[in-house]
Image (cartoon, one colour):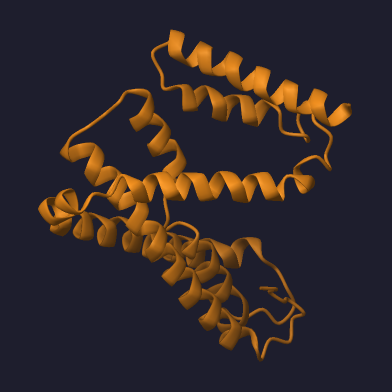
Amino acid sequence: MESIFTVGIILFVGFLFGEIATKIKLPKVTGYIVGGILLNPGLLHLIPRDFTSHTDFITNLCLSFITFSVGGTLFFPHLKKLGKSIIWITLFEAEFAFIAVAIGFLAVTPFFIHLAGATWLTVFIPISLLIASLASPTDPSATLAVVHEYKAKGDVSSTVLGVAAFDDALGIINYSFAIAVAAVLISHNTTGVQFFY
């Protein structure tokens, strides 16, 4: 019964904040995000802390629907017409985000991580690469929600959805590269920092 009540709270708060967002001329997904932040188990304690650990199946199911929906919007004629612009936007957006975050973290990690024997090769560069790899992909669910809510059609929405799909693929490549390089660099680590993957 407690699980049903928790799901009811989540649906009610999501609906309420979605409607509030609509009233102030914002996309509903904005309200959903604000509602999710407020329902954080560490903030208001309305949702039990262990509830999120039991929702892996639902999370994976939702992600598969989102990925399928984004893939279903990529029609070949649109891709043929907008292919070059989608590829260039994806490359610049994903890779510049990766490079900018890596450089930013390389600049600040020595000031925040104080471990005995920490060096650039064994701690700072691996951490910076791993965090930077998370900056590459964009969340297609928010994009898809806005496109569906406003029934947007045309070159701009096709380009945005195409970029959202392709930069997720590029994000996976960046993460694979980062985890491989980090694993090699920390293999000689003597500070006790370990990454599990």
